[in-house]
Amino acid sequence: MTEFWDWAVASYERPGVAEACLRLQDAHGQCVPLLLWAAWSGETQVSVAAEAAARARSWLEVIEPLRAVRRRLKTPVSRDDENARLPLRERVKATELAAEQALMTGLEAMTPGRTAGRPVLPALLTVSAAWGGRVPVEGLARLADLLQESV
Image (tube, rainbow, N blue to C red; front, side, top):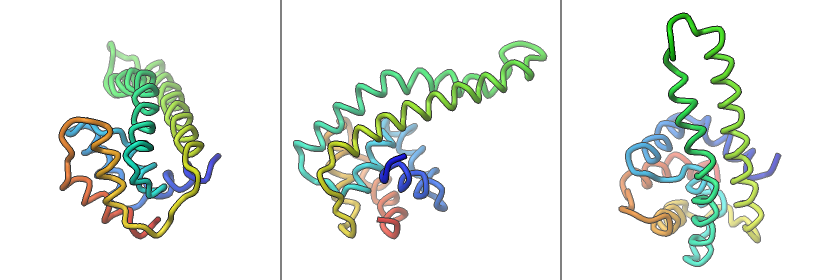
């Protein structure tokens, strides 16, 4: 495990963080591992954020199909398939998590030094802008408030 991974898992378990992250992901197309990396690293350099976003985009080509399959397996595929479907869903979930961890390990490797104690929101805004699309300022501010105590 990595320092960033351990921090991200602990932070994600904090009250409200998972919900805020999933809202940013599902409603605004944001990349949760990238946002968590921005909060953890405090990175606000546009060039570094763009490089991190490109790395995340590459990994999402693997992660998103796995996520779609995992979500699809929440409901029955056919009648009486619980014994086959639920264990398969858990294996897909583990693979999805391993892919996210690989992405996060790569993001940590490109972080020269963590700048703990910095305000989280500027880093979230920078990486969200690098990600592209509309920057969901309100959702990022909510996430920043939830994460600020853990950085």
